[in-house]
Length: 119
Image (cartoon, rainbow, N blue to C red; front, top):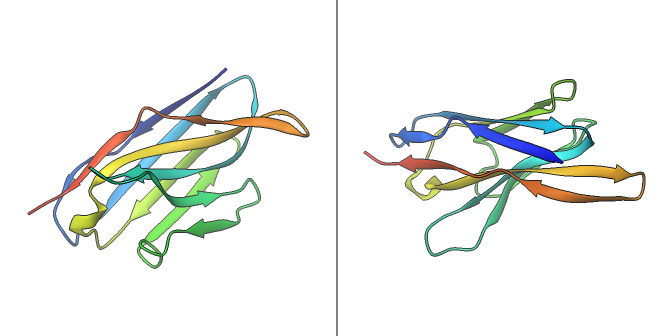
């Protein structure tokens, strides 16, 4: 079993920056890690993801303002968001692909951390 623990959410003013971190613990190997977010009344959307090899992809809404990085040895992933906007307000969820066998696995989720952008 894998446990994902997020940290770093909070209240930030527009234009500010925030860093979210997620640590995965457990006895399985971890593949792609990343972040989703869900704003009130909206569907959960992918924000950014990074493979074990360091390939990244970002949602258009955060591209240019967001940097995702990871430490494979520690199974941690970090999301830096700059120039925060009101519309970045959401619960941010860490996700990680848990590798069970070379051809199977599943996606696990963290509990979520609230990010509120407000003046």
